[in-house]
Length: 621
Image (tube, rainbow, N blue to C red; front, side):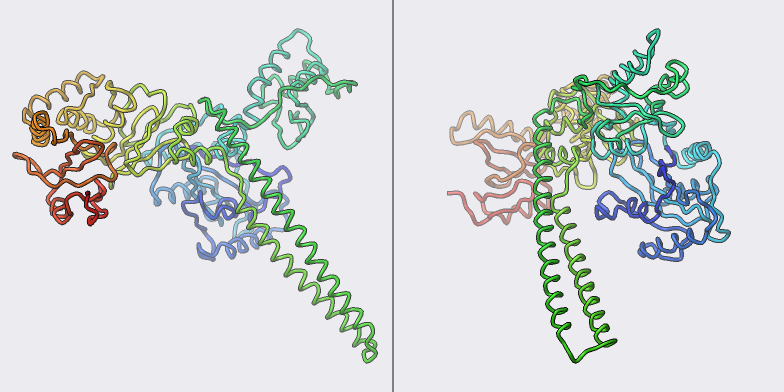
């Protein structure tokens, strides 16, 4: 796990209220929030507004300290790790204790909107009793030590962090995680960084050459604080410290090589600036058509939102105009009244003004709600969410784009079936499935799940023969017959046994597992009663023209509506149900309960082959 302090506001005036609303995800109705709770507060967990006021009141009691009074801590876990609630509570308390703020008021919220489960912890640095504003000394090292301790205590994967990721700010990382697009900071450290480093390696670079090189990308370098910042000329909010781009661009190195900072020379005709930063998706899969569709949709949403907001603005102006005329009429009538003079008339004018202000506030509040409703109805969609939506509609190109090319980590306790991926990802629509933001497709098989990660099929900690069979069949369809098994010995041996018993057309790269599979094929040495029944019926079909070909029912391909043709018994095996579909009989083994239910279904009825429900009275004519 990784724990670090989030970047502070440059003015040191962070707002606990704003931070609390962000991590409690109030703006998105908690769609990325698993749970949140307050600690060391008198207010209850459900009383968020009251708890925020309590914490802000505590901060206000410290009138001496001018430094930031809120500490924003983020703890993230390895991909796939999902600690239990009691473990998360212990992790939160241990981290707070490590910083010396275990008894301070705080809000913790667990989010799962990225590939890594993470906890946001907003801590009030002002102690509720001593009112001292505590600033942890060398907090980075304190948090690192606490993380190593927690990894041992809870059996978490040891994660020392990503050195490259640390060179990108937390805000940039949030942008990349939520939008699935390259941040400005990552873009600068690509081609622009290479260009600048190459320039600084020349014998005698100068400031003007540096300005010109930056100008080619629409960038500029300027002093800020104790160093330099590289930023977009047209948008100074997009910036990065020059030393983060390269150590050769730190203030010390630049001053040493180029001398004191010099402003760029203004030329009459600036050079062409063809290379500009534009957020683009990370996915390396060709998705130009999808990206264009996404951008067009976002432009349409923005245009509709702007149109509705403009209409509301016009309505608001009209409402204020009506109120103003109404007030003018009442004021003119009051002015003509001769029965009111002096204090009484001034009091009536005051009442009239207060009445107008009250109506103004009412109109303002009403239109604020209507504007928020418009923004909600026309909310922009992130690139991953767009791809996820398209993927759930069966778009394999969108699924390929959603699966950003990056190494995946093994999940603790999980097992895998791997192989050489096909050119395009596949769906198995006969199962209920869900597409996640990272492109994983989770198929639900009763109480168990099988996850298609693109380059491998993942089976969870709990599995049975049916789960393994589904995973093997998916892998056979995705990767071909040569498969690799990865996971516990129990899983690998059970998978080999299942493949052998079912005579599956797969082979394992591990010779021991292949031998295990073959041994089960030999030792079982029995004839499948269902297959024997199918062979017998197909022999008859070859002699009698009105008997259709028979084959075994395959859930992934055959689920759906079919014509029910009755029950048959097999020699030494289960009952089988016959369904007619596409000119052949599908033979499906059924248990006693399902056989009993099917006895009440009329022959020739169209029914669902999985639920055995349908129009039982609709006899085939």
